[in-house]
Length: 153
Image (tube, rainbow, N blue to C red; front, side):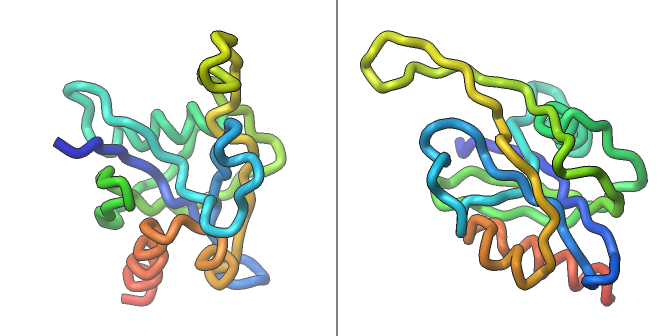
């Protein structure tokens, strides 16, 4: 069975029009990647956990902020490796420069026996829809279309 995650696509309306908050994954694999690497804050759904509950928990773990407001189902995408991601749209605002992510540990460098700690998310930023289409993981880009459809529908 495919891995399953849930996440939040936070959006705001400002002087630049519609903007979305994306996060850049931490760790050595993503360190030098930019275009096509950004994504929504998301994570694995725990046993017995509701999709929205998981999405809100992961948002707080990755950004250090509890989202407020009413989240609406946005849709499901399948990432390149097969992972399913259920997303929720939520209107809100936060200071992207003030995030505080939880850390994960992994062996680094590979086969060195040395364990190192890395933030799940090393940065967050607000992007216009056009910018987000360039920065975001290709497999998550349909979420931008779904958001625009919801807001314009």
